[in-house]
Amino acid sequence: MSPLFQCHRVTHSVGTKKLFESLDLSIGERDRIGLVGHNGSGKSTLLSIINNSVEPDDGDVSRSKQLHMETVEQFIDPSLAGLTLAGALAEKLVDEEKDFSLYKVEQLLNQLGFQTKEHGYQVADLSGGQQNRLMFARAVIDEPNLILFDEPTNHLDLKTLIFFENFLATIDAGYLLISHDRHFLDAVTNRTLFLRDQKLYNFAMPYTAAKEKLDAQDEAAEARLKQEEKTIRGLAESAKRLATWGKVYDNEKLAKKAKTMEKRIEKLEENKTFVSKGSNLNLTLDVQSSRANRMLHIEDQTIYSPGNVPAKLFYIEEFYIRPGDRVALLGFNGVGKTTLIKQMIDRYENDKAGDTFKFNPQCDIGYYDQEINDLDADRTLIETLRDHCHRGSENEYKTSLIKAGFPYLDLDKTVGVLSGGERARLLFLIIKLNQPNFLILDEPTNHIDIQGKEELEQQILETNATVLITSHDRRFVDTIADRYIVINGGKLTEINSPDWFYKLNPLQQAIPDETHREHADRNTSGESSVDEENILYRIVELESLLEQDRARKRKFQKPKRQQSWVEELAELNGLLGSDAKPG
Image (cartoon, rainbow, N blue to C red; front, side):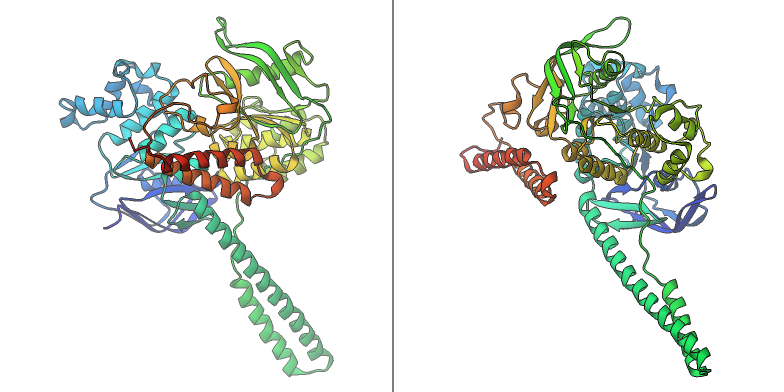
C-alpha cells in the first residue's frame, strides 16, 4: 500500500533558526503517530508542511491522490459562534451533502456524547469540552483518511481526554498528533517520532517503549563517544611526543609519522559519534525543608465561586497537608480546583493565621499559576526576577537566567513576548530562587514539553518538597503524588488511589458518594455481568504499573499503591476464574 504522504530531505528555518535539515518522513493509512519534541523544535511547523500551509525551504514533498486530509482546529472559528452545534458541523459537509445528510450530523454528534437537546445550542454557549468535541467532529465528518492534531490534549479536562482516547480507537483513519501527554500517547498511538537535533527519530511503537529505545541509543552513543575521545586523546599525546622527538633528534621519519597521526586525528574528529543535545528547557527547583507538623489545615469551610453572585461549589469538613506530602487535587473542570487554590494563596498572603485556613508560621509558598498571569507582561526578564525574588543580586539573576536557557541577548526582552514554555521556565526559576518549602502547582505541565515534565518530576522527588498539584496529565500525577483528594458531589474527599477516577464513564458528571477512601480501589457497582475484555485490559495495565513502580529507586516507590494494585489484581483474577460470563 503506497504512503499517503512523503517528504524527502526537507529543510526549513524560521528566521535565522534552522528547525530541521534533510528530514525524511512517510505516513501510511494505518499509521497512528505521536510526534514528540521539546518546545521550539519545529513540531507545529512540520505539521504545517504536511497540511500544505507552509512550503519547506528545500526538499521534496509528495501527497497521494487518495489522500483526504483534515486538521483539527485548535480554536473555534469566531464566525461559527452564532451557529447551532448541528449547523456548525453541517457547515463542514460538501455542498451536495448538506441538504440530505442531517442524519449523518446527528449520528456523529450522538456518537460524540452530545444529547439531542444540545444539537440546537449555539456554539458560543458551549463549554470548552463541548467545543473541543465539535472541532473534532468537524475534522472527521467527511471521513478523511489522515487527520492531523496539534496539542489536542491541551486544557482538556480528564473527562473529555478519556473520551477522545476511546473515540480515536474507533475511527477508520490514520492520524498524526502532537502531544506532551505521555499516557495519552501510549493509549492512542502505534508509532512515535522524536523531533530533535533537526532530525526525526522513528520508532514503530508507542511513546514509553520508544523513549526507552531512544534512551538506550543515547547511552550507547555516549559510550562510543567517550571511547572515541579517549582514542583521540591518546593519539594526540603520541603525535605530540613524536613531533618533539623529531625536532630534538632531527629525525624526519618521526616527524612524518607525527603528521600522519595528526591527519588520522582530524578524520576521527570529523566522524565522532553524534550525541543529542536534548531539550533546551532547564527546569530546576530548590526548596527548603520544614520542621512544622502541618503546613496547612483547613476545617469546616465552604468554597464559593468568585464573582458578584457567588455559588456554593463544595464543602471541606477537614483537610491538612503535612511536610513532605505530595498531594494531587482531582476533579472535573468547573468543580472548583483552581478556586480553592486561589483562595489558599489569598489567605496565605492576607490572613495566614485565620480560623479556617491555618498555615504554619514556617510555611513559605511557591505558587505556579496555570495561566501564568502572575507576571507583568511589560517587565523585562531581569525586572521580573527583581520584582518577585526575595534574595539574589543582579549578577546572580543574569547568571540564573542564562543557566535556565535564556540567551544573554534576550535578558532585556519583556515577558509579553515570551512563549508559554518560556514563561513557564521563568516562573519555575522564580520558585527556585525563592526556595519555598511548600509548592502549589496548578496545571504545571500545560506549557512544558515531555523532557521538561520528566525533569520537573525528578526535581520534585529529589527535593522531598511538600507539594499540592492539579494536573490532567495522569503520568505526572502517578509519578508525583502519594496522597489524592477529589472534589465531588459538593464535598472534598480523600481517596487511596486515582485509578477509579481515571476509569469513570467520560460522560459521567459525578462520582457516587459512597466511593470513599476505604473503597477507592474497589468496584462497588454490584453489576452481575463482567466484561472479560476490560478485565484483561485492566490486569495488563496494573501489572505494568507494578513493574514500573518496582523498577524505581526504593525511596521513590509507593508501597501503598503497590499493595492496592496487588489487591485489585487478585480480585480481577478471581473474577476471571469465577462463573461470571462476559456481558
